Image 1 (cartoon, rainbow, N blue to C red):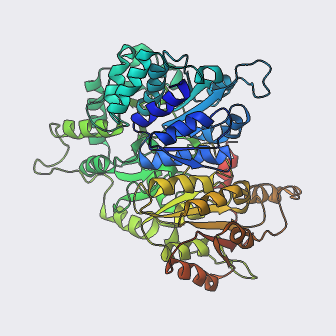
Image 2: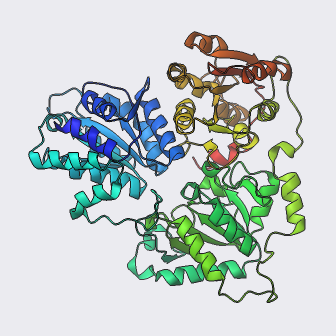
Image 3: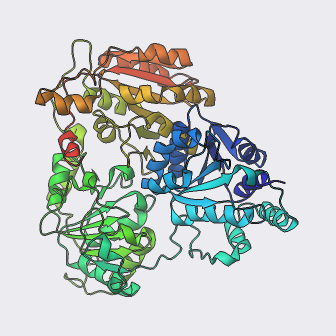
Length: 600
């Protein structure tokens, strides 16, 4: 057994179920080793697509995904997807071969590039250390919730394992899926595990606090308090707040039960960042997404809060709408695993370092023994949950309940009308992926999802062109749901090669192309300034014809009546993916666009 074979065997033994990539000479043997040991491998048409598929799969499956790329150009082709994953703290392991000859055309400083985009770098140093090196890279991704680039030097890949290392691989394979056994095998690294079986739980989930001083001072030892004090202070602020709002971010996905239980006790309204959309679906106190996509009523209620708690949420400019959604007198609390994330994007009054689920449970337990500012027989506070607020949420928060002037006509359909009609047509059990562009607010806010597992949003880096690959990764993670990809015409053409991957994999996907024949964001931003738009407008593209060439079913939509083709596909065998080429009106500017351009 050589190192390349060992890496594949070790990762399979650790429970890796899915790998994505484009095979080349440098990663050929390690990729085949993964397959031989039971890992499913999805061959993409471009490394960039493979990276985003792996990112989306890891997010929606709750497991570590593997990306396998060729050295040099394979790695750089994947770089945008790796950057998105790193920014999103996706547990992703990138297998990155390294050329060793200084004369190789493929030679670049891959570790420096990986570090520059926020990924963690590890390396297999030798055949003698391959077990430790691979296990620790995997654990760094799993427990650290981070993207890890594992360098595999080409000469090291060929080294034959000594007997002790072979025994270590054999032991891992015998205990397949036992991550704790793997950590014990690498006991010298001092890995500790959380008490729960949650794979993504913090290895040190106890809460600590920092003051409202920003990121630089947040790391100073003098600002760290005892865990009990953090929980007590957070409980006290919740009890005294009159209009609390909880905001769940990517770090809170899957914790709706704990957060809703705590919110019910303190009378908090519920919101999410865009990436966690759907987490509180079904709650009568759900404000949906906080940020650029918020409806006017949701924005007003959030601005009226006197306490905002961000659970696994970093309060980006997009979430706070450049700070305008947080009232001047509102106290802000941030709960996050990463001490260095506290107060970086927005100043906070209290930083609580800990796992979201465990922190919420601890605060709820602390509240049972606290004196409440209400009658002794009351167990819950009304807080922000008044009948008037409940009525507003029921009738004004959803964008589809807000009247608008339909601009459909002259062979084009209003994107709002299109999306509302699709929302009514598509089955509720869906998983929606959205690309970037002027159009993106419509599918984000007008396509409903059943829960927090129904939305996959790879837009931390806000790159155009990731939407289709995102939908592929999400679809593979959740085969029980209808995958829906919402793309602009620009992003669709950037990722068009992966249409072949959708067809080859037999995914029953609905791909909606919002086609305004332009990079609409730039058109609506620079057009009113009198700038020439020749660089961002294009002649018509027949997406339906292109899709049929790849093997998809396709329908062109210019009006409501054309959506009958979507209904027919939904009632049919769904044995081929469907591309909906929507010729949308060009004069509808995104409501959120001005705020986005202000923070460029």
